[in-house]
Amino acid sequence: MKHRPRPEEQDDLLRPRLIDMIDVRHELVKLAALIDWGVFEREWAGFFPSHKGRPATEPRLVAGLLYLQHAYRLSDEAVVARWVENPYYQHFTGETFFQHRLPIDPSSLTRWRKRIGEEGVEWMLTQTIRAGQKSGVIDEGSAKRVAVDTTVMEKNIAHPTDARLNERAREQLVDLAQEAGVDLRQSYARLAPRLALQVGRYAHAKQFKRMRKALKKLKGYTGRVMRDLRRHLDDIPEGGLRDRIIVKLALVSQLLHQQPKGSDKIYALHEPDVDCISKGKARVRYEFGCKVSVATTLDEGFVVGMRSFPGNPYDGHTLRPALEQVEILTEQRPELAVVDRGYRGHGVEATRVLISGTRRGLTPKLIADIRRRSAIEAEIGHMKTDGRLSRCPLKGTIGDALFAVLCACGHNIRKILAHLRAWLAWIIATLWSAQTPPDRQHHTVITA
Image (cartoon, rainbow, N blue to C red; front, side, top):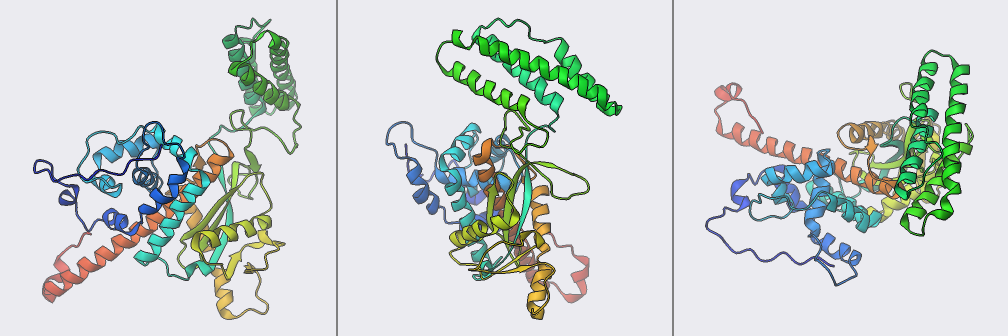
């Protein structure tokens, strides 16, 4: 059901207002005034077609919590808990009086992300771009000159090894059999865990012949449990449990029959869509997650496009969708896009594309733009270090798409807040210089 409008809160002499408790010069207070919160009420209203049931949470509260969560690198539980303690967080989400209870259950953020989908979070990214233009972080025409690059957003999974995957598959099949009341011939609950540990020891000692022999035996244990449970499938009544068992049997069968260099390998049983991506890093040879395309303004490094691409496509094939997203979010078609050499053969004609290493026939200004391309690497590093782009905890490919855009929102929020802090410090320093005699200025310390 659609949310109810916020009731008009009358003055209460016994309850001080938040605006009287906080510093109106704080960056979060200024940022709250830059964002058009009414957009979320209008655009997210279509996600609540039913008029029955309990009213939904106010969109500004949810959007504000998601902004704060990714700006300050917090989990669902942490951002809700910190909201109770921080009056600036409460003012940012639209509260009038200080609240002493949790605004929502942390699980509500999960349900909201599923409901609004990728379209809803793209509206959040659009509002950060407009707030950046209002605050002066970026110019109106900055989105016409962009830098595009790809990175890997790793999934929240353990490092995949054959021994771990086979042992985990056997454990899940045994648990499902016990839940269905199926009496297996043998569960290998004692032999399989010991053998899985032994595989790791053989690999550490570089005794690979023994390791392969033990791994083959462990794989046989999992196959026997799978076939035993499949024989009892007709005895399990129709319902959700039987469907879960069928899905798990198909997944384990794919795991047991996959080839070492197959294109459809499974790296995690709870996340079968994870890709193995090699980016040429010396410290990490392979990364397990999803490829993400990042588009930033060439001059300021402000994110104007962020999109996930499952299946590990070629970088050149991701350029056209990335530029289309920038045009949709900013309502401006990019005139210049600077990319690295991995984008050769992109096939984009509507936008002029400059590839790193190209100098022949270019003006000094375009050569400087090509050198400027490397600045996007630092922006991606900040999103992984200061933000949450380094590891995606959301489930499935839709979780990758939502999380990537939300990380872009958090990066833009941090840039706007830093700009507002610097602007406030400059104003204070200017006022102090005008009021303090020149002979005493070097004895005073300014803090913003």
